[in-house]
Length: 251
Image (cartoon, rainbow, N blue to C red; front, side, top):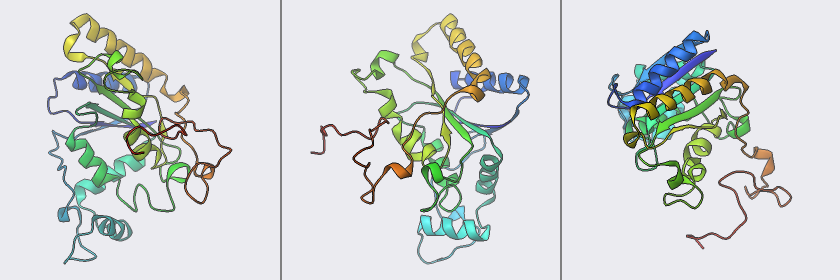
């Protein structure tokens, strides 16, 4: 199996770095081919812009989506983006390793998503969700938090973790066609002692040995939705995002 590890932490000696080291050892020992994209070490630029494209469809007005579509058709992405796109295309499994910052990923990783999962490459209007480009590939998140697990329970102060992760799980990975695996969360890393950290790394190593046998998370296929792009009346909502209860903030 070809595995791409996308590492997004400014400090290589961090606990996220230890998760990366553990993943490299465990996956290599299991006979997998492992490639690492170390975004900070590579100086990956977070902001999408004109430099993403070797030539432009419209040099006078920058429309990122239109330029991505043009670059996908004409092999006109900047070399650093083409390299990352080829790494994703070659991977059977992509693991994102990062610290959770402000309920999301570091800016450098968000920029990698914006620039590498480009329109015409990772998705288009005809190729999303269960019809997505990356059907048959697996992806997962592995991240650290500064808070304990109780904070992210359904009634916890920060809210239900599965809803916090929906923009990544659903809005990025599943939308692009990946089979999304349950995340690995290293809870409250700044507050646990060395023994606790070793236990987390041991659990991570065990988890890596079983990834090929895991059942992916459920996402509604496009066929579950009607012409109004809402779940058909006879389809029971089955994800953290779709429900038929009252809204609390928008209604």
